[in-house]
Length: 317
Image (cartoon, rainbow, N blue to C red; front, top):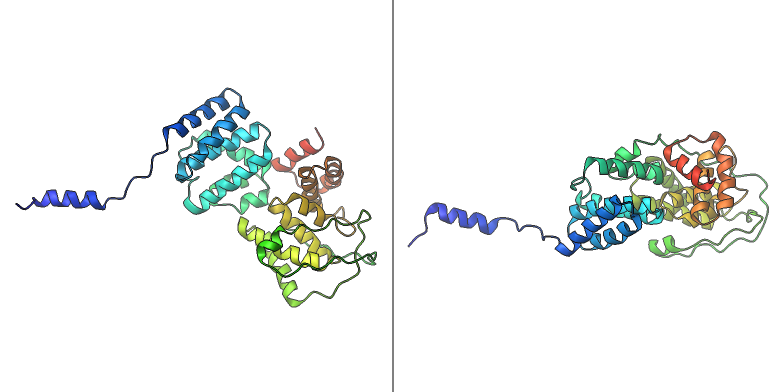
């Protein structure tokens, strides 16, 4: 006997309907609740532990994962784990870029506002401006970043031995390579061969990328290019400072500190670069050096919540 038309249509719709997303295991939902309650009780360390495991159980669900990571970031910030806070922000950016997980997550407005305030205080404005639109409200809380013109190379560089040029290799090898710290006197090496047209093109591309505040992967590419030229031409101060700024923008603190201190160091009329150096030294564990660089930067530095937050930490105010 033939099925009625409506019955056949209903069966067809049932068979062709998309499958529902896999539900999050109740075990991880319990951990999420435990983390939320611990945070509300003022126990951020306990909240971190619960939320980190809860987020692990949501890896296949972008929206719940983003909501969990947002809470984890707040707990990390409250616990003083700024390295963890920045790492969690990077994960949020990746989820938003791939799945729009953060913008579509079920989060109370007050929690988003709280996270935006913490991002404005702890993430560079340039990084926020290069992030997806969902994070632009945090970037708007900071003043626009002034452009940085590469300073002219100082005259009469002091001679010293020239380090080996960076070997040819894959981009990953170039990024992972750690430059050798300069000697204590910070003397300039003897001039190498002039910049090639390809190297000049790389530096120009880096300047453009830093000015346009590209995405994280583009900034990592900019650092690679600047690093290649800076290591091959240690006497080129413009290349050293571009490499230092690019390293700062991708949180490569030790690399940023090395490149920004090469040669005769930074002049007082480069307050933004001096601030980048101060933050990089502080995050690398050199608080006295960070304080010295910051004091030179502050008289000419445009203030923002991010600048003020680091000023309090570095100068222990």
